[in-house]
Amino acid sequence: MPLSLVLVSPATEVCHGFLVTESWISRLIFNKKSKRISKKQGNWAWNVAKQQKRVGGPVLSSMLANPTGDLVVMSSEQRVYDVVLKQAALVNTKLRSREDLDLDVQPDIVVPGTLSLLGEAYDRSGDVCAEYAKTFYLGTQLMTPARRKAIWAIYVWCRRTDELVDGPNASHITPSALDRWEARLDDLFRGRPFDMLDAALSDTVSKFPIDIQPFKDMIEGMRMDLRKSRYKNFDELYLYCYYVAGTVGLMSVPVMGIAPESKATTESVYNAALALGIANQLTNILRDVGEDARRGRVYLPQDELTQAGISDEDIFAGKVTDKWRNFMKKQIKRARMFFDEAEEGVSELSSASRWPVWASLLLYRQILDEIEANDYNNFTKRAYVSKAKKLLALPMAYARSIVPPRSTSGLVKV
Image (cartoon, rainbow, N blue to C red):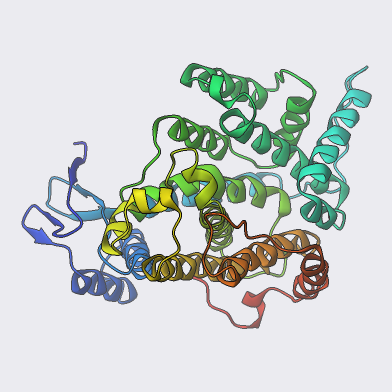
């Protein structure tokens, strides 16, 4: 029998006579440890507890109840975590079936007349990455050639997708245009690229254990931008952040690879990559509050704004008040928590892939510092990291990149 879906309010989460409280979640986590419930149920409870810690209160969730009356809390975070589990299982399966394959030395499949075009496609992807993501591009130079080119191809596809709704022609983009872009993605994964840049990604997904789902989810995030300009709570905002940024981590891990000496689970590394994407997007949102407001958009949890005594009109007016400062402090604290989660997994990546990821993480964290330095005025002042600070961050990122995986020194992953 299919599961029945019951929507519950954030104030009183009740379903089939059960009350979901902190004590209920604590008991479920305890039972996970004592193995009286399934590992999957324990992971659900653990993720709900983590999200409540980030939000600082109840989480608006969906609940699934099966015919026996068992209760399952399904927040946006859990929905995304299920995607993480599937991606990790997929990459594990594919790598086991190709364990004798060294991706770093695998030759291109040469079709007469196409090899030079494919090389040109990757070169063009590298040019785009160098132009729009200079620091990250510099970090990719330490990667092996195959991984470096693959990351460029993924970056370019993500940028082109984002440009559909944020670029110069965004006002002309319709849902049907995104449908066509998704159909083109399907063709790309089937080995039928539309243009040169598509060809680079098509070649990449044929060589690495990359799944199409995160790419489709990113397109879904673009659809969300077309129809939605407000988010009721962090649960909704989290799902949006996953769609438009968390997906990038899931796309990239199969290319970057996990260090052979790492004892971390594939799931934990994927989860850390997801956390970095969420952290980066939350940082983008906090940095761009004023810019988004001028477009009539508010990418902040409406319920938390209300609790802080702040309205959309206050944001459009762009006044930095004590209420706004206190609100921003909580939002910045949450973003930093996601960065902390991400750090746990970066060191588990392949040694040649860590530097660009550490550079991205450290530089994005500094944007939060700059918002604080601007006295939380993200209405008229754009927080940015100066060139000097970027240059200082690079050797720091490199130093962290050569530290061996944490899991080899006794860190327990769950």
